Every structure is written in structure tokens, then in C-alpha cells.
Image 1: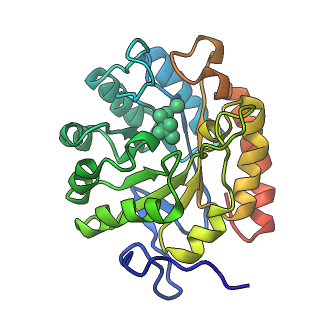
Image 2: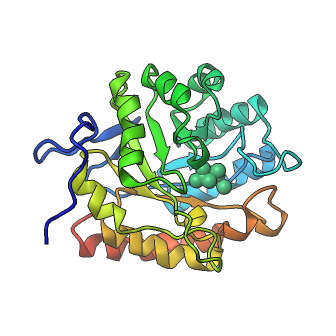
Length: 277
Ligand code: PEP
Ligand code: MN
């Protein structure tokens, strides 16, 4: 059967030839031989929480730290993040651990501040089609972690990447984080088929987020291993010292010791498909 073809108007994000784009973040390369792991809490909550998690994920072999300071919450009553204080804590954690940090921008107005503090700027699922934000990030010197919207087709997702590339910022990392289906037992349906599909259609690196993609911590390790087996260039995993006390996404967060065990189980999977971790 004929393979699906990409809309030919998607030019900059489309694969041209064999060469993959490798996005460099300090010493961390996305899209090379090594599978990278981004780990950390959903939200930055306090110095104690962040420094503890940062040290432990580093110890377990994570190559980047994540943490939200500006949170896109479904309800206005939920914790909205620590804002600039959260960004200061993230830079402090980077200084302590040497791990580059990724955090989310909600609007074009956030970007200048985030450029000061973050190594990578995340576009969340809810903002994948925030075109002013995508255009602003096209002008940025920071790499962008572009999450797939929960109802976006692959072409819409690559179209969003096209905005950033068209603006002149070539450093885009795609992130599959689950899509909405009729299934309610999982928070979203993690669409792992897009890993080989998008790697065929595009030259950009693809990482997988099994935390938001499943919504349940028990499902995260098996789906993380499946993502590596499918050819993902990286993983994004939420880790919290006390998931039951988390201000956001506790049900899907691994404890530091669960994260450590997961990391130990990934290397053989990577090796089996000719990658390293
Ligand atoms: C997050 O990374 O914490 C987040 C809000 O993710 P998403 O945009 O995928 O829901
Ligand atoms: Mn989260």
C-alpha cells in the first residue's frame, strides 16, 4: 500500500534526503545516536522540591531538567505556577546540576523572560496552534520543544513546526504527548506510531512524553520503553519526590526511585535498535 504523503506546502519541516537535524542544547544532542531523557516535576513548587528532584534525576542519568513555571491549567482555580520565581529556581538547579532546563511559554509576552532563564522553551499541547507564540519563537535563539496538540493531526503539528522554522529558528524538537480518543481509562492515547511516521516525513528529532500520554505512573515505564523501541530520540518524564502531594499531575509522576529503575531498564532496549542511552 502507498505510504502517506505530506502536504507539499510543508517545506521546511519536511524531510529532504537522508540527513536528520540534530538539535544541540549545550552538550546534549537530540536526534543523534544517543536517546536523551528530560525529567523533572510537572510544576516547580519550591526550592526544596526542585533541587531534590534535579539532583536525583541527574544521578539516575537524565540529560535535561524540566519544570513548569507558567502552567496552562484547565481551571483558573488550580495552581498556575510560581512564575519568575520558578524560573529563578530552574536556573539555580541548572547551576547545581549542570543540566540544561526546559520550561513552558504560554504567550509571546513570556518569551523574552524565558530566554533569560531557560535553555529550551516548551510549547505545550494547548498552545500548539498559538500562531503569535510560534512566530515569536521563530525569532528566538532558543531551541523549542513543540508538543503535539491533543487533537492535532501530524500535518497540523508539522505545520506548527513550519512556523518556527519559517521565522528562522531551525532548532525544533517535536514531542508526542498523547491525543484525545474515546478511551477514558488513560488520560490521553499515546500515539507511538507517529514516531516512525514523523521520522520518515520530517528531519526533526522526536521525543515522547509517556507521562501526559498515559496519565498514570504505572503505565509510564512500559510506554517509555516502547517509545525507545519505536525509535524516539528522547523521552520526557515527570518525576516528583512525593507524587501524592504534587500541585499538578501527581498521578502520572514517578517517584525518584521509580525513575531510577526505569532508567536502568532503557539501555538494553536502546541497544537492541542500535541506539545508546
Ligand atoms: C507539561 O509538560 O506539564 C504540560 C502541561 O504538558 P502538555 O502541554 O503536553 O499537556
Ligand atoms: Mn504536567
